[in-house]
Amino acid sequence: MAKIAIGSTYEGRDPELLEGILPLVDYLEITPETIAEVRGGEVEISADILTELKNAAGSVKFIVHGVGLSIGSHEGYSANYLRLLDSLLEHLDIEWHSEHLAYTKVDGEHLGIMLALPKTREALDMVAARVMELQRRYAMPFLLENVVHVIPDCPADYSEAGFLNELTRRTGCGLILDVYNLECDSHNHGFDIAAFLSELDMKRVRELHLARGVEHNGFLLDVHSQLARPSTVDLARGAIAGSAGSARVAVFEFMPEAVPGLGYEAIAEQLRQLRSALNN
Amino acid sequence: MDLATHQRKLLGLFRATYQATPEDGPYLNRVAASRDLEEGRRNIFLWRLWVLERTSVLTFRILLRRRLLEDAVNRFISQRNISPFRETQAPDFLRAMSDHEDQSVAAVARFELALEQVRGGDEASYAIPFPTDPVALLHALALDRDVPAELAHEPAQNHYEIIVSRNLPGHFEVRDLA
Figure: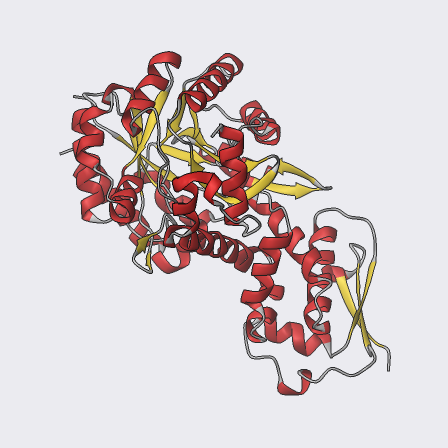
């Protein structure tokens, strides 16, 4: 079975971090919104960060993971996000792009958080049509990620895995399986991870995400501020085995605000450990 | 309930601008009464805090030192339609804080906003009145030290002014108007 590649988030302007992680990763995951800056009132991809990424292009591949598309908003997704993505694609070769199966705005009003979609036929029809649009627009694979359920799920027509299976069946899109998000849902809402994984069509999983947040008032928060727990790595190992070769890369996610607290060496060691743990 | 109504009602619950009624059914009432909703709001607050700590350094620090941070960020969240594009949050936040009732907070926010705009290529020149000695205040904030006690009492008049312009060395200069 092919070995799983290792990836890391990188949001720019930290050359020491980049120098430390480049020899340890196969992919850098870029979020267009977080490498953007405001110029003359417009949000644009930062030329400085683009230069950093171009200089790294010889040693890694790039994948894009957006946060601002809001594919699940009833009124439509974000044109600003697509404008940024278009701009990024003009300058960088991207292997595939992805987003969260969620919504961040309602009638143009930003929630400030991502909410999971209700697993209804109406939501499925809407998202499937949008995925098809995106796949026609961009000649590269498109993946959707399972997000943390901030609030309890509402009564639905599909199970969590059933919704994803039907979405991938209709559109041919791939999936990101965020195993830390599954752990959050299990901890916060009693979500049955084993049942979910046994129902999910694992052949659609191309990418895995590993991260760790903090616990607050008994809730596990999805804030990407810590090194991954052993349980998260074990879950990823199981998912990779279950994907029978379809999973190509496991990405360790951390936010730039967490870097000073974690330290460069700890991040590097995490990436080394993941390569070893997920490939043996 | 259709998707649009579902999403609008959840937006209202998160912003505390909508109260679930019996007609909304058991699900929305369960969410409205849940600790999950409270924690979700807290999560929104923390995400804002982390971004603003990194992107609005001086203003964040003076708010923190004056114990005004939590209230200021909560007001910012509830009153502004904050974009998910993180780099737009700093200018939005600094604009909001430019009207803060604490004159030193307002002055620092105006200064930080003007500096960012000038660094970003803005050709305009900005004159920002300061109620206290800006050199001592900004120096303390830049080093993340306690603001000197004598700067806590603001005089009735502005005795200082900072000019922010891309034509100035370091992009700003302080003028003593006394």
